[in-house]
Image 1: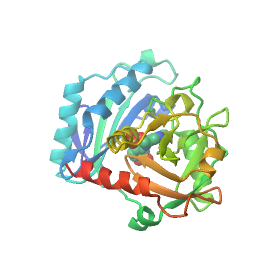
Image 2: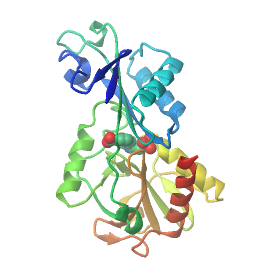
Image 3: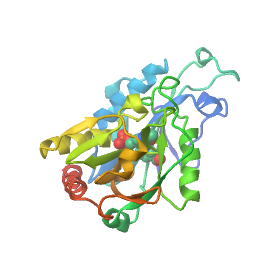
Image 4: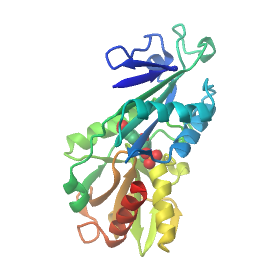
Length: 283
Ligand code: PXG
């Protein structure tokens, strides 16, 4: 494994960042998780755009251009000879003195890791998964905009702990008002009366790249989509439910807080979208 740090490559054992990096000290930085399918990096430009937008919101200057970043990602994939895998692209505030002040950090650090992806077992995609609502709320959008994919994931970590303790893989996170936001690392969709509904970033969801792909697929199938306010009642009474994310791709949900979703097995629209998604990633 060859890891990129600021233009140089290091083995896994030698890839280190200083303990004074504000990414470590304050979670001050941004990241992207990206997939490689059959040698192609999926929606790379979209991930890079989102990374730079997250950074801009944090007043974080990325020391390379978008084109240079794209080249660096592609070169790192090539050097690691990975036809299928996972890219973790990280930009930290960089090294500085102890103290929050980001203006004391001279240069942001860029890290690119290319690794294997740990997939959910196949049966989850066939049978669907059970999820719960976490008591931990998603960071509210007036505190930190959920479109910022930052290195601060503590709310999500706490919700993930709740999921695992309940014997589930994922947990629903509500926003501060109690409306559905998303899951800890996935967006959430429901199908109701033939329409596809998902919370927007105003409700606390990350503007997911897989979510956007799902919306495009749905529209191409003539299914109406809407980013809207959803309550737990809406989830419990949905005809179908699924999660979308770079890691999980599209995974059907068949039980929410003990309530069976629709027929109790992955729904027809969910399966149609999953089928199209597989075709798109294989291109
Ligand atoms: N919400 C949150 C909070 C996320 O972190 C998504 C939604 C889905 O977005 P994309 O753009 O991936 O469709 C994410 C994505 C990991 C990992 O290693 C996490 C994500 C993506 C890839 C890997 O935990 N989060």
